[in-house]
Length: 304
Image 1 (cartoon, rainbow, N blue to C red):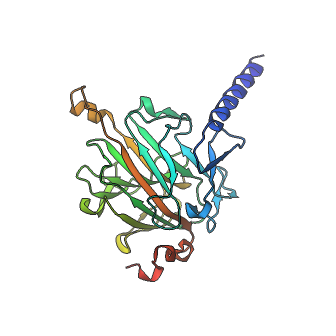
Image 2: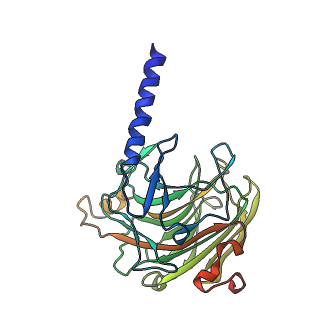
Image 3: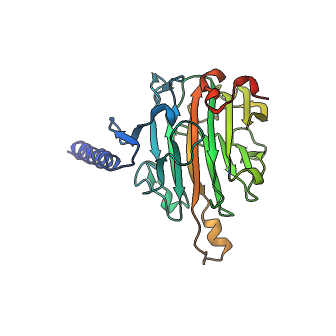
């Protein structure tokens, strides 16, 4: 009898959450069901928004599968925080636009951002299968976009399935863009590398390429980052942590440690402004040529 009741409760849980996932309506994105409650979707603009044709992904059991996209947070994704628009683009006709403001949070399978001092509006992809992986993406941040200090502001990351983050692009308190490495660190937190000065972060498109060979922990391999064709990060280190060998990309806005802002203002904080970011020219491949850099009037030969 107890087993039957448990199955009924479990069935209700998944049915309820799948129904919630299907409630998402974002123009330009087509949502679809699978066995789980993940809000998977396909962009109507296809390769114009993100090209995953040159890379294969893997399931939770390591089997090869097609790469897929989903929303993060999974439940109660903040309304009016993700748009597909054609006014500000890097290449093609369309680009992603994220707007995340005060109180824009939701829930995950293993937690509630709204109760854990976090706000986010992100897109996640399933973990790539290949070891050597090339990422291409361009980011435009308008001048009015606010990155409130001392809140942590992440705008791109390599996370790990069922594990902690590995690498992040983070806006520092002084406005610089930093590469943060959570796998190789000297004090149990993360190591930071400045990759773009604050005066170049806003008001223009910046192009990024990340090349990492993901090898099993504790083996080491290369980690490289180019910013506007100039190589800024180039070192050898661990590329996976000891909890997960399944890295995956997330892009969008992720804010954590929001309570720091409240503490700074002694429990009476002023209203915070919106964080606004555009993403375009996103592609992932096994080789540099898979990224089709020519779409941005670029090429692999121009990487310095």
